Amino acid sequence: MVVWLTVFPLTFCVGLALLWIGLHGKRINDHPWCRKCRYDLVGSPDVPLICPECGANLKKQRSVRVGQRRKRPALSALATVVLLLTVSTAGWVGWRESRDFDFNTVKPVWWLKQDTTSSNGTVAGAARLELLRRLDESIFSIDDSDGLSKSQINNILEHALTIQADPHAVWSPQWGEFFQAAWQYRLMTPDQLRRFIRNVFQPGINITARKRVRNGAVLPIRFDFELGSNVPAPYFDARFQLELATLGEWTLPRGLLLRETWDISSVNRLTEWKRPLISLTPGDYTLRIRYRVVVTGDYDYPHAGTMAEWTVEQQTQVTVVDRLTEVVRAVTDERLADGVRAAIVVKPLRWDDNHNFVDIGGSIAVRGPPVDLAFEILLRAGGQEMRVGYLTAVKGGGIEEIDTQPWWPGPSFAGSDRVDIILRPNLSVAERSLNVTEVWYQEIVIENVPLESSEVDDTGAGGMS
View 1 (cartoon, one colour):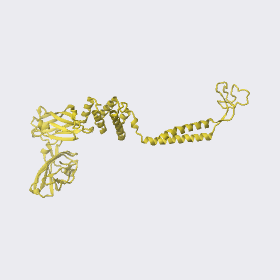
View 2 (cartoon, one colour):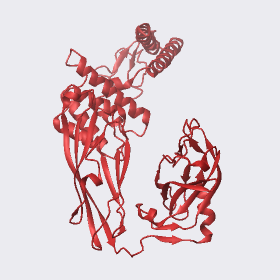
View 3 (cartoon, rainbow, N blue to C red):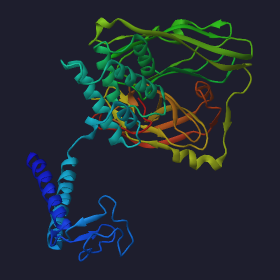
């Protein structure tokens, strides 16, 4: 490359010189001639005042030239060829070399920030990597002029926090690495750290409750912990501590509703159900849940202590009706029967290694039923039935909840390699769900379902565990 940088300018200058010589031409006489129209003034004893050809004033300075020249077309053509070859070769070499050159290394910070939001994933990823590289230079370089300045780092952090807080924006783990490095080397302000952590642990816990329940029945409440899409590597631990849970003026028992401390460090999603028994006068009530989030450094950064702490309160409406009021309707329309059966997919059951109990995890899935479903799940062999759990599913969707447990086979199950699965409709099971308001009220029997070893891999969607 160094050779080319020397040859190209030299060849280009030679070509220009040859072109100038060819166009300027060789002097062939010493005749005076009009610069404007190139009329030959030779033969006159004195240079006239006015050009006899064009009428130009020949007394003006530089209006008359002495000596005519003849251009050299061959030399001009050679010079043109040299210039064209030089320019085209230089362009080709430059294009070839530029393919391997990373232009991100010379882009200003504002340009790289703009690229990080590009819809082109390759462009955005390369820009984030370059910002991360410059941050590393800032941290580890002896020369303060290398990498990013403190104001640039602060500006980039604010830019990344805006992206992180936007649920519709694309978040990259590279941003998490940028934040981690900035945090470790004390390049983040305390406010930026708190905002970053709050964004990480959003939405946090979402609370959902059944909208309409009977007095004397249970109130199904589901707690969903879910991190957003802006999660970095798990550098933090969070504890979700319940502070208060009320339904109207009634305070729900603390231990009944939720574990006092919910430790979250590496799981991305967790669901917990609670079903307190309701004994209230019929009417509309507000369910309020308040919990505190305390974030500390994980085992790699125990010295960090409490890094952020905040309180979240959520509420939802619940209507309590008289205990004799119907909240779930039974459906027996035969036109729905085929659709209900087609929506239920059963896979072989699994025994554990010593055949002491059967694990039915992953054996039943429900996909798009034409009506809500609420079943007890029973197994039958040799005339004996055993209830092993229940499931609920919503119309057009899938399983809302499935609750099963291992079972100890009785004498009729001993040695069986096939069983019948019975799905028996149950209105009480429906009332324990969040959204089931009508249920298919006919029993479904799936006969001769194989029992397999626990070594068989079963990863069916909507599976039971």
